[in-house]
Length: 316
Ligand code: PMV
View 1: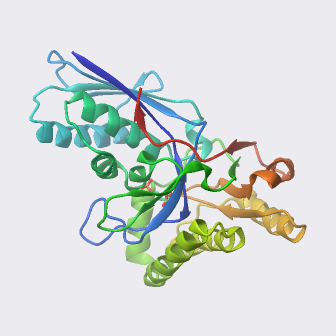
View 2: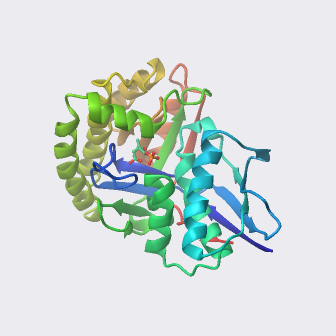
């Protein structure tokens, strides 16, 4: 019997990826740039045992069936074939943050799984190979292999762009509902590609926006970076909305308005939203407590989680 445990953290995209390259399962259509968040963690133990008769996925102490289990099992089958092992695995995974918090648990989930499962099956892989493995499960998971700021360029291995201490960044995750999201990002991306009249424009926009953000990040140019990361989120959502996919709720819009108002009051804050109604507000550490208080007082906000750039996925 071999048991290996790994920890990984969620990542939030500053430059969003939305849509896969045609004919691929996990290659993004556009380049993306993210920050891996410390503090919030997924801890996963993979046990490989000759006696097991099937793979088992335990999430938060519950044996899981259905879509998440099928996705993990298909992923494990590929890994087993690569490792040349006939043995099944038990996966036990726990998030120390609420799953409906709007933080991408599939990213930290597949990043932790890749690190733990590769080791449990005896594969000695470098970080880029582990990222590629995580990407097979969830495209954005590739970025959670890296500490600080990471990029995922179509057709290339994910890699680090800057260390966690490159910028004194705080991400304020404003939780607007406890409900699980209505539509998976995978299905929503596919619908955007087939139905949005703006999908091609999004792809063109995303390439230039990514380049601008990458340069602004390396130059520590907050104003350019902030404006461009907010533009990325709105452009992604505009493209999806034109295909009938609306992730925003009333609190999302109220928060976006509050963020705009705070900027006119001289507080450096920029809003970003993913495949859900929560708002992630990017700010500098010097503005974080003022911004957090202001966001907590927006009607409908359930809580605000403050996170800073953190480590990549690792074995423990
Ligand atoms: O790879 P997925 O299915 O977790 O999709 C992630 C999509 C967004 O979070 C909306 C954007 C991104 O780049 O993380």
